[in-house]
Length: 512
Ligand code: HEM
Image (cartoon, rainbow, N blue to C red):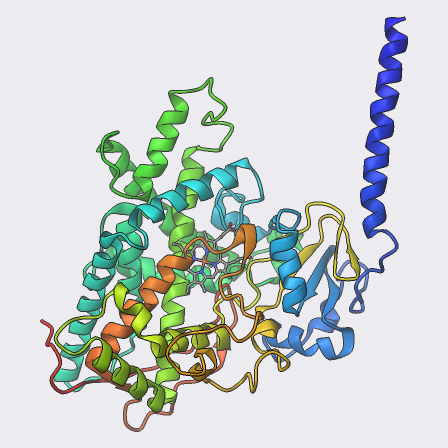
């Protein structure tokens, strides 16, 4: 009798499960698949992807033929390209958890010890736990707290001193290493409670390995599409492995130093926060949060810190480089920001975070830079974790989803003259405050995978630009062409190298 009851119970549960899953499937069943680019067995749509344009521009152009949502095959992987904000928000926000997966690729696996980080790690308890710790550590230094502001202002001051020296010697400067050092030092203070001086050999090697990583990771290179190609020698993979091994030595050194002088009573930085979580999980093995269950291995800790470096330095530096390029191209914008700084902050004191509200034109300029040259024009690819839909199309579990932020930020229906650099579009009609004229604007992504460093990045961009423009006017050195507005596509959209003249403004503070 008992076995009969068990059988009935089993049948009932199975039936209920079947009904629920059929109900779910019927919500996506019947919908067509998105239009697909031609694809051949094995190579997928590779032949249709040849273009002189970078992928984000090319994908925007394909809308004319295939519509706002279409798909292509990268080898055996189905990839869905989203070009409209309505669908982007459905993916990132409305169905954020369904699309919270990340694809595994050869290059990101090398970079992150097979996804043991946040940005390329799959949606899991480990990912959630690490995001929470980083978020907590960033809040500890975060908005409203004086320490992050102090750290950024100290770096802004050092940057202005370098510009001052260059101006005194009548030298034009490639600002890239200086901006990178300033931003790196902010992240270093947050992660390791340390910073670098100019010319420090460790910093020089960091610059070198970062560029190597930017040049080789996540560009949908052939080896990421056809993983079996890694059997063959590849200069890119060799370079990536070399850069990753230099980065790992540096991270390991910092980790060992932190373990050696760790104390439960002080939390100096993010690494201490991670070590504390690891120790408390190890001391509390019976609790639901054991070190094993939340992935607090040494690898996870190192990759999480590596991620904050990777995601925090290159992105913010790149936005600053684009901002300076656009200011050089548009001296009238620069002048208007300086007038705003002169009237709202004056020249006797340096800009602070609390001045943000009274400098709307500078804020509008930053928003416009993030619109016209989004540093991550394709975000980071997402993956559908179950069968689902986007708009009127069905989407199969495992499909990769690329949000083409470039299409959103250059949509002619949403932005008047989208190719024009016009900070005024982000100002209210009186010019006294900032607005968002369109919902087609997501420079930091949105939803469960939204950028973890958005608040920090905004503070840095605001303070660095306001300090520089309070004291200097930036221009192109005589005889040089204006810097190129074309970006080089990679893990971030980087501008080409350029030099600037920083001319001190009369009557400003001097830096030593
Ligand atoms: C202006 C500078 C920055 C921009 C424009 C930017 C933009 C983005 C974008 C578009 C994403 C991908 C969102 C998605 O896949 O849906 C992202 C992810 C991420 N960003 Fe940023 N970011 C910036 C600065 C930073 C900084 C300073 C940090 C660290 C302190 C940071 C940490 C991260 C992390 C950890 C992720 C991965 C989040 C996840 O997958 O759960 N970012 N960022």
